[in-house]
Image (tube, rainbow, N blue to C red; front, side, top):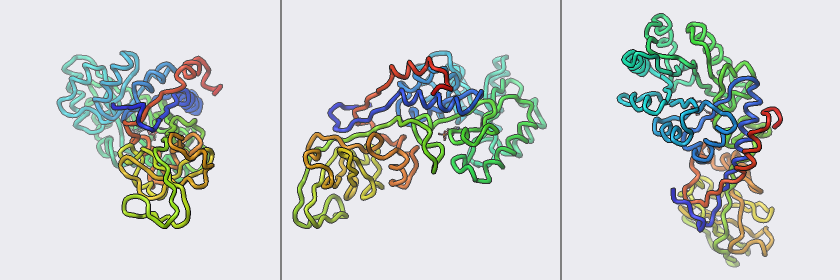
Length: 382
Ligand SMILES: Cc1ncc(COP(=O)(O)O)c(C=O)c1O
């Protein structure tokens, strides 16, 4: 990763806030075990830093999407935690799962058969989770596949089934009818399999109530500060703060346009600041003319198009002595808008903003020591 202290933009990642969020979610889950979803490099925030922090807090079950992500996480965290691979084993990858003690989430009859064969050839049952599709229509055994399996449980020989898993499609909309439908179908499928532990809830699912918690909850986005209860106050702490420094300030007195496509027209006397953050850094182009920053406590709008490496903001309303080269403008978090608000302006979700965050920023991990302290506190105290 090319991070650069000279980037002119600072991405601060607060590990104490991450730790607090894990504890908040664990407390909300009551006595249910709280796993952590760390795919896509901990949603873009850095698995090397986030993984050890969560492990120190006692998180012992982790989920990633890809085998490679699991191998990397195993190297970082050692042999202790259970690491589940949501995509399951691709053909020919089974040996690598065993070499790194990774546990597949089995999603198809083919993955199931492959894993069972391997367990039989090893003469020991191999750990796995089994995903059933209860309404997402994306990954997991269909209801028909699940019924066929329930009628032929010998197909599970060679597999040490740890969890029956499903995934909610609309957990961030508590009133959506599909939540209860998925839960009821999940219960019916659980009754058909004598499998024991079950897991259904993602971040938002935890807030749907205890009936959705089962034996393991699997939050991702909320750990990293995204609001799991859209439309309600965010119960999570802010993990990410992005600031960009002003490169140049231009006083415009006569009518002119700003940026590519001349989409923004300045008529009166205005002051325009240029900041070295662009769509190559994950500051999405759809924020053109939509985003806002915060300079010295004053909201300053993005004007004109977001380009690859630069944005332009109208800083006329900020105190003139604040609008100078080198001054920092909050773009996400801090005194600026939340990640969810930025996402909404960009026409997307906080997840996409997080996982798009660029690699050129001066990345600073703060609060690690505070996170250590948090680790010694009881979950309910946070
Ligand atoms: C199967 C599964 N479980 C849990 C999660 C975590 O979801 P969230 O980030 O909404 O908490 C994901 C993420 O997409 C997922 O695919």
